[in-house]
Length: 270
Image (cartoon, one colour):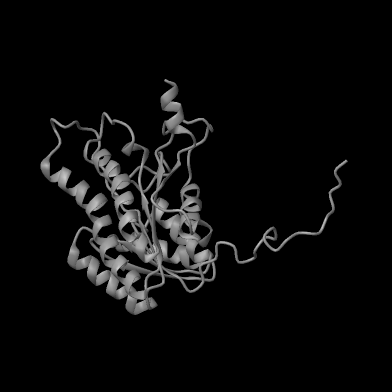
C-alpha cells in the first residue's frame, strides 16, 4: 500500500504576493481613452506600472488618466498622438522615454472600423483610414518602442489586440476585417524577428467587448452569440493582456489568445 507523506508546501506552490506586479515597468497603451484600452491601463496602474495612455481625443484622454490614476500604486500620464503618423509616434515614444525613463511593454490596441457598407460602396479614403489607424499604427509603434526595448537590453513584451473579425467574413465591414486578419500574421512575424532580443509578441482577440469600435457607449440590446451566455467586459480582455505582459508568460510568444466566450465555437455550430 502506498503511503503519502506530507512535507508541506514547496516555495513553488505558495502564492506570490507580488504576482503579476509591474513595479518599475513602463507601458505604452494606444487607444487608451476608452473601453479595452482604458481597462488595460487601469489594470497595469493597479499593478504598479508607469503607464503612458495614448489617444487623440483630449477629453477621453483626460478622463481615462484620472480614472487610471485612482487604480493603484502606479502612475498614469496621457499623451496625445496621431498613431498613423511616423513623426507623431516617434515624438510620442521620445516623450514617454523622457517622462518615465524607458519602455518595457507596448499594447497596440487602437482601432477604427468601416461599418454598414460593402466593398462596392466603400470609399478608398475610408479603407485607408481604417488600415492606417488599425494596422499601420501597430507597425509604427512597434518599430519605435521596439527600438527602445532593444537599446535597453532588458527584453520586453508586446501585445496586439486582434478581433474575431480577423478569423471570419464580415458582411458589413471590409477594411476592419482585413486589418484584424493582418494583425494576427504581423504578430507572428514580429515575434519571430524580436525573439532574439527577448521581446515577446502575442495577440489577444476579443469578440464584441464593451461598446462597439469607435463608440463611447454600448447600445442597449446589442446582440451577442457565444457559449457562455454573457457579453464580454473590457476587464476580460485586460486580464488576458496582463498575463501575456507578465513574467508568468515568459515562455509564451507568437500566439493569439481568443477571449471571445466561445463565440468562435458558436459560429462553428451553425
